[in-house]
Image (cartoon, rainbow, N blue to C red; front, side, top):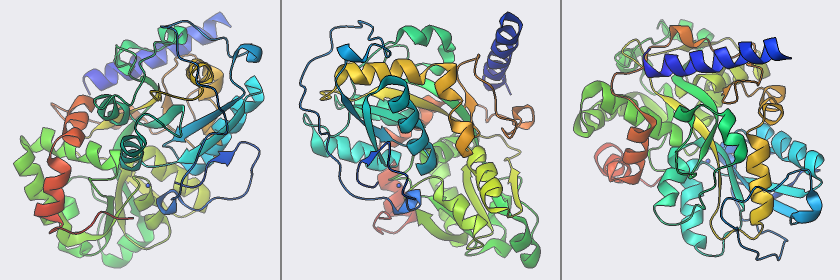
Length: 389
């Protein structure tokens, strides 16, 4: 497993040491418990009610518990499952007394939104989704670098190094299959990218679109690492297109489709598949490509020109704590926390069985997302079709 396994060992050792020592909706208020639609159906706009225009002062630390020094509201750009967005927002509001709202967007949507809003963003902080999101947005000046004092607790491999983003979780890419559906088709759960080309899976696979999803960018980087070039990856995706039933806007939506019996298999992050199985009771199988897989580092970062920069810093400080990172598991978010002191969910996929694709790195996914790969995918694989809405 190489570098990725070393990373997991670092996290595990941190836990031992701690034990011995002791694809969007309108901005949603943290007190709103109305059930939301699936992430793939999210759409709309959001604005912060705060009118503060105070600027960040270097890397000065803001105490999240001293709310009198902070703005009284914050708007969170959230790129994890809707339930997690709601729970994390509510927990921050309860901890700090700050009126917190969120809007759920996929990585691609988030980048497009930041570009469209420019110097007048609706959001203060970005929570979740792969690090390629803020890494891409930073190139346009849409991220305000911030190194939290709590970043000292996070392994170096899970940080950008310059404050662009800091890791909050790790998750491995995999295949999510509906066992009953596959049995009807007479097809075994896929354990390689070659298996996904099985003629028995024609119109029975779902995956996210390269233009809208960080999960899709991770899959693309996985293929480039395995096949050696972008051309080879696009050629493979062209073959796989024969078996694709639907391309989705968000990365997790294909897993829900598998759980609902709309498709037999999906390409998603493995923790999402485990969550859907728990939620629905459907027999979903998580498998990984034997050739090697990719992984994401979920992140937290600050939006440039935020209306509430001090509250944004306080949110980042809090999001890196073990307490904050244990919120996810309460709503079936089974990623591995980045803080070694945080408890790893029992349902987390064991990474001992995951082989990392040689040459894969989150940076490769960032490079693909920021280059012409999404447009080439649109033209060479999708034949010019519009991105999913």
